[in-house]
Image (cartoon, rainbow, N blue to C red; front, side, top):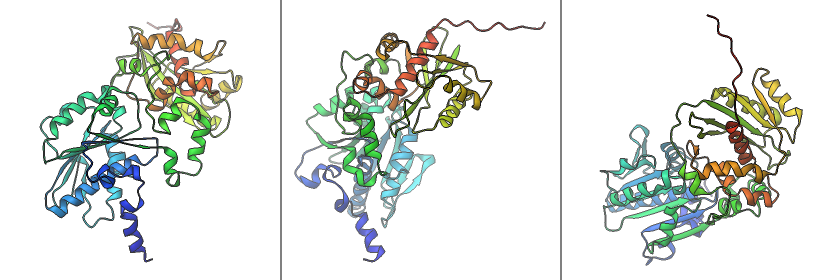
Length: 420
């Protein structure tokens, strides 16, 4: 077929989409729904489903001559731009072959179609930004990562959906047991679609699904992040979502100490990950997790450079690294990158769970704060015991535990000579 016809066929979403990527009324014209909740694994195609839904709304509005106002909501403005709008499956990409594509105005946080339909971008970090605007429909992405559980932002959106005869919302997210997810699942007007990462295997990098299954198969994390299942927190788990959310913050006070903790990878397989966590302590003794700089499938010199880079980036006091796996080689690698970097070797003499218990107690007391959302790290914390039972290494979580342990040890700064 001529290339032009092939492009037209490729642009017909109904011919290419899976059933779980199509809105409820496509298969059930009489379906009575207000919220379409797409719960899917990483890379399962949920972003494409949301973007195509908005595209269909805009095209229908052009045909009817009734422009729409649509809200686009993401955890942050960066997420909205890089995923929902400019991403490989975002709106600008899926609308590129339309005869009437939208014009993107980043400074004004909006997309405008030629007929007057407007899609406006919002960050879940700014609930009050929804006071005033009004909309016909909304697309919400990754609501499980919305600030403070997202309930305030969701409520503000509900007040803003006051145009048209039947305002509707599409929610695309990897599920997590947050109060907002439970609230949507209990709503009789919610229509639910499920998808697993493997369903979209043809559109992912070769071996991607296999590598993830090799690392996480049989764990709660795999069921949530790959299968798109809603896994409730174990009330007896060391680290719970409630305790992490309790300490989440957007800014840190002046910190007395900052360390970079490194948990070197145990092997060189496709699942190998070097945990690199940056954390600090304030004057009250509270801990602030500043960055997850962990690297997957990285060679020794690469992760050593990443650790030293994080040390300078955060003006840290010390690099702390576990040496059970690599012995003196770990310090030698750090010294090759920067001979002057302060280094402390730590050796695990107790089991992982025993080492983690004092850190989990600090979370329970609300004394550990995450500066933002660290999805991969947090999911390892929530599945900590399950990963260990399955013989997997929670590298990011291990690095966090070393960082917090170091920051809670008595610290005596070296003496300094002052010349008067």
